[in-house]
Amino acid sequence: MKSNKAQLLGRKIQMERDNRGWTLRELAAKTQLSHSYINRIEQGRLTPSEEALESLKSALNFTYKTSCDCQMPFQELARQLHRNLLYGNYIQAVNIGEKIYARREEFEQCPCYASYYLYMLACTQHTRKFRELRQPYYEKLNKIENIFEGDEKALYMFEKGLYFYYVHNDRQQAITILKAVESLTQDENLIAFANFFLGTLYSQDYRYYRHSLEAFDYAQRLYQNQNNFIRVMHTKSNKQMLYIYLNRFEDFEQINAETINYAKIKGEVVMYIVSLKNRAKYFIARREPEKALEVLNRYTDEQSAEDYFYKIYALYRLGIHVQALHTIQVFDKLDLSGRNIIYRYGSDAIKHAITQGDDEALIDRLKLFADKAFEHKEFMLIRIAFKLVSENLKNHRRYKEAYDYSNTLLEVVKEIIGKDVHHEKLS
Image (cartoon, rainbow, N blue to C red):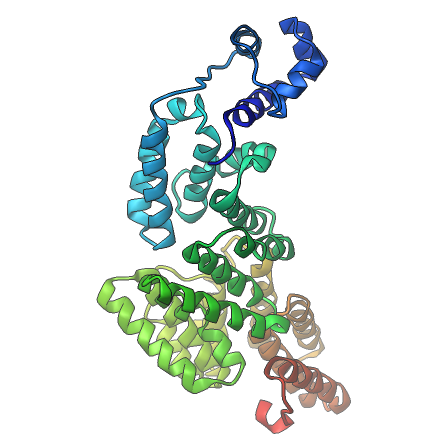
């Protein structure tokens, strides 16, 4: 960290004061120091005398060593943690994170405390270790973010972007923050990581699929430059669905087979499951439910709300209604939140279709499903929902409404692939 010791000490004092809810004047009264003097110390514009520092440490009841011999060991551990996170070596990253956390009291009492909070936040966000500490670390960092410069500023912005998405579910704010990372660093692995997540966030809205593919492609090129092959393959597995949405089926087949084979050889369980999920959705998009079902049945331990819904949909399309209802019973026990709620609307509509038949209530349920899918810009669900609504409206001879839904779906597809599409290609 390039920040000088006065800044680090000043921010530490301010953090301790804020933790106690004291004003500058209240701290001044407890230390017999002027509030303006303390303010200059907190802003890093003045180094306190030894007597003043001892008075501040005593009033705030904290320990701080302006010089220590733990700086070099910490920097080496932080470097190892950062590299393992960037290269996806999460087991090693957790081991190093545990070593850093074991020395937390030592690191929090010296000038490397800010870097300690930063790298531990990174550990909490990219591994499942210390997850309960994510918010406390972020709140500490949020008070001292102006301390960071260069690569650590870039890393902080990266982790801040992820925090806004994971904790606040604020995708737009996360995108804005992540886009700033590249201007702060020349670390190609970190720039690639930021673009990887930008691609992931853009992929959640059909209006930005092309932006998503551009971000993934850029990340992949940077990872290749750094010989970070594991991240190259993770990027390929995450961008596969975009090829389906953009009608680039040959590209999908190629990289899907590539990532599945790589995952099998290297024992990359997450990559293997993601690639299988993509293949199942590929067959759903191609209107081949029997093949989708075969793929979905190849893994059971890591099934998400999305997987359950596609299984229900495939079974429904194949007329295997008893098994579909059984799967719905299991699905209904899941505690869903956020975007996953959309799948519940689809599952409820299919359940009604099987148990109650093709009536007006079914059309209402399907319209609700379609509205929710469109609201969240989920193209696969828009495609399924609008298709089901159109079919059922036609069954009731409400052809004008059916046409309107088909036409809306057509406009969505045109917006995605950027060219004219005919109605028959959606049937």
